[in-house]
Image 1: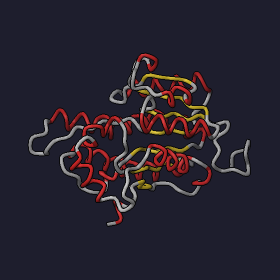
Image 2 (image 1 turned 90 degrees about the vertical axis):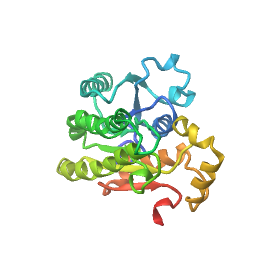
Image 3 (image 1 turned 45 degrees about the vertical axis):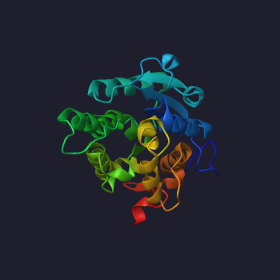
Image 4 (image 1 turned 120 degrees about the horizontal axis):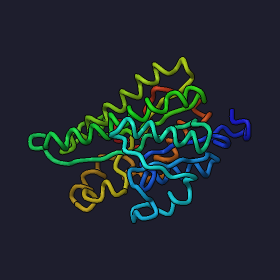
Length: 257
């Protein structure tokens, strides 16, 4: 239990959380939620200077205690990020792997470069960050949440690289949970359906696509960044102390049929 709030297992006082892709969208909301619940948040993004990045939201700016640059395509960059966080905060308890990209198009014509880029960022990038953070997480008996997707569980047209990468993230989560359980490091994933962020601007602008998409969601709406952030916070918290290797789908029922 959290010693600062022994009665509230949902608090993160005294803990340091690292969130990748934190400058905008889902990552910004995750950072804000963890900060609101007492965590010291180190936010990382490929943006070199968030202050000059028009996509960096006020939400992220207000929630992140320290800002860092990371390129998850580089193992060295991931290791440097962890070293920076440890230097600034002295510890690392929680890791959220949120950085991700998408490339859309039919599988028959998608370029190998686009396919590889998506896998390199979404899947191998998640592996690189987990590997870089592992020694610190082991020392802290910490927790990891990886951002998956409903696309990692069901087949979706014109997103082959994204689907395959997110399926890999979900299974990577299970393997790491198994390997790291002896060190009391929990690893889980969250799989959202469509969320209104910059990544989905193009498809949300297609009225026919959006109508078809919403028809697959029993609850009849998109997931909001806060819906995703609340699930992430639960899995990181002591309230989920006996949960590891699992994926929570924040999808309004997409994956139940």
